[in-house]
Length: 182
Image 1 (tube, rainbow, N blue to C red):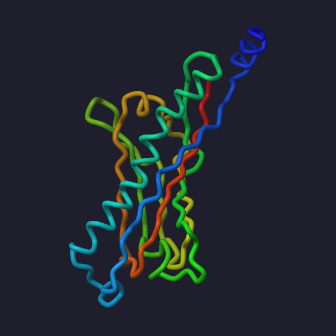
Image 2: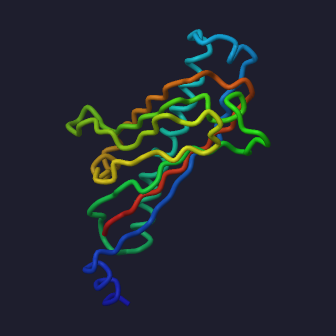
């Protein structure tokens, strides 16, 4: 068995690792959609909860990656690359619309970095999110190696751009997957 592990390591073993956030409720308001200009009292909670859903999944990802590496007994990782970042509405509404879907977001950008020498770099984004979106698969900067950022516990910076706010409560879960190179 040790020979097999050595052989797999020499061949560049890759481990897929995924994590998800706990469901987060983004509260709806009957005032949403009644005006184009959203007052800060409606914008800020929606933006904060959207940020929290993405930040939470990255907080879970570091320990999950380490647990998978420890389970394989193959030694330290040499690289970690993001392979998926998805926001999902759960449960899915019968008739998605901007008032009952993730369509309250018009765009979302995610970066990672810290004040300890690692630069802030974009890692995922979604522009022109459809108004009836129930799932958002973000585009990825697949060449960014997240290993150093995860090891240092770097902060994830999430910039949601609101189209409106939801009229009804929306339950949001985020899912992140990475490929760990050993």
